[in-house]
Image (cartoon, rainbow, N blue to C red; front, side, top):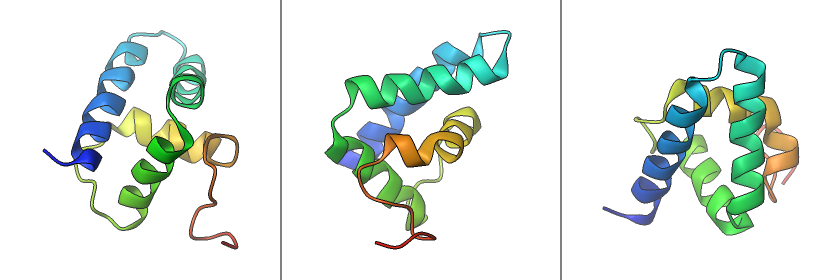
Length: 84
């Protein structure tokens, strides 16, 4: 299992926890806050680079939604649709 696979697995575990929240917006915010608070910028950048390069196929949809919603505040580098 490579680094990206491990990060996806961890992100999915976080997503599974927050999926049980009755308020989806609270769950999305919780996932983003967890990734921002407990993951290093390098970990977050590695995950987003994998998503951008379409190397990630198994990301939990709620995690993907949280990343889309909070990408500006979560990631040290910008998404490909913004200037790099």
